[in-house]
Each structure stands twice: as C-alpha cells, then as structure tokens.
Length: 123
Image (cartoon, rainbow, N blue to C red):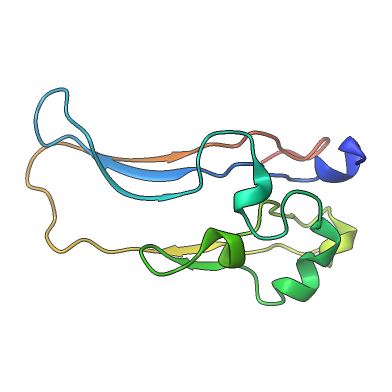
C-alpha cells in the first residue's frame, strides 16, 4: 500500500465526540464515530479502498449520530480539492446529531482526531 496515495487528506480514525461535564471531573459522551485506535477497518472503504470513494460517496458523506453505521456511512479517507482521484473538488462531510435538552451547566466539546493528513496540502 503506497503511503503517499493514502496520505492525501486521510483521516484514518476520525473520532468525533461531543462531551459535557455535568459535574466536576465527570464526562458524558453524546456520540462518537469510530475509535482512536489507528484502525481504518471500522470505516467505509477502510483499510485500502480509497479508489472507490467517488463511486461509494458521489454526494459526499452524511452521518446521523445514533442511526448511521461508520462501516457504510463514514469513509476513512476524506479527500480535498487537490485530490484528482476524488474529482479535484471540495467535499462536504456532514454529521447530524441532537440532544433532548441542552445542558444548563458544564461545557460541550467537539474532538476531532486526525491521525494523518494530506502530504502537501494539510487542512
């Protein structure tokens, strides 16, 4: 597997979490896509099918927290406009989520874990 091909805006293990701290020292996970384990097998097209991106995601990725399956709905690789193999265009990756009631105290935090990025045009 050629590393240079895969480093074109790769997100090997995109970990998106929204956390809230209702009390000091406590956290609550609202949602998550994948695990921070450097393993792309849990995502669509992983670990080495990036050449199928345009066919599998012609309208880019849409993930609905609590409903979507990362293995089908969230690609391990997220190309950018410098990636000719994905149409040389910007791509939009959408994540939809909701909460029944907004927390009145504490804080929410979105964590995005990029394990790798484009070799010469990182975000």
